[in-house]
Length: 434
Image 1 (cartoon, rainbow, N blue to C red):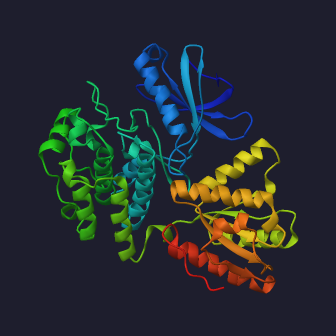
Image 2: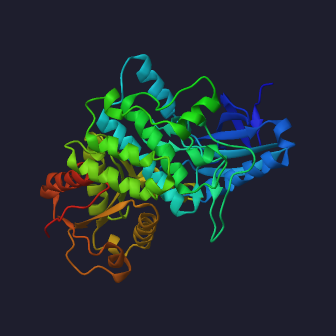
Image 3: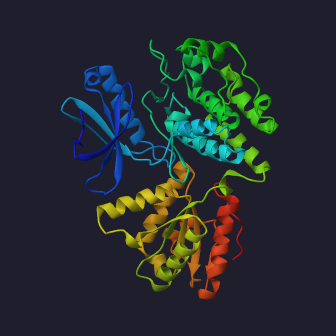
């Protein structure tokens, strides 16, 4: 049967099928953007357990606000079919990327593998911080945007930790055998360390091009995860640094007591490794930038346009709001772009420093940074040396400022912004001199 409409969303094409249902690409009628719709099978919708899982997934993911986690926009029922409307991520999955490399007899370059793995781990650490365990981490549940940013999807069997609540699996063992921790395989109590184990398997696969365990059946694979040690990474890929093998061994420890206690601790070791390497993850791919300024201010407008063109030419993804229409859609787009950007460049002239819109955008960016570690706020004084209003200065201290006095400073300002992005993106800011 061809599906042409789901709720208010016109369907464009079928993206895939699974045991639970189908995923469609559809159009959002108001926002003029594509969305992905997960529709559960009619016969599955009669199972209250399936519906409960589906509803829980929608609520869980909708509460997570991180650029590395897929966003849920809506959840509803059409007749006897339940559906969930999500962000549409054009591109392929990480599993498809790895399969394609394998067919070509290649592995993912180490710098690229670590860059991607770091962002995945950061998203998982954020979810854990919000009390959510994914329980089915694998490359097939990581979508890659067109600029190779990983986005974590499919929280269908996630677990929620609340207060002193302790979670155990049901009689059904959910997950994917190739990536399941020993305790998850047995249906025992699980926590964030089960996700850490799966992350270890993913890093193993990313750096060697192969899985640690294979078998003729799911049970044979589970048996190996519980009882056997995988081949060492460097026996498969001798060029790997010893530190990568050490990290994987600790993440995949069969005893949770010997494993990383959290994804955040795993992330710390990944960052330590990256700092010792000449090519870190943030020098491989472009940054997402958001230029915050007052549109009616002449110096701000001119500098914003110049920075937009110059930074786009350097390969970065730059958002500037001059083309967005006024109204609710515009505000949603502004908020979305702030949430996914790595850096917010704030242009502060005397006029913009008093702008309520600029103050609101800076305070929102500050809140997102507290929640998810980004965006970093880079303030640029635009021909203005006076005291800033406390309502905006409070969000900028102790950051120092790039100074723009006139057009002769254009190239220097671009250079200082570029140095911050290419050298320290996601780790720390340089000490600019006033």
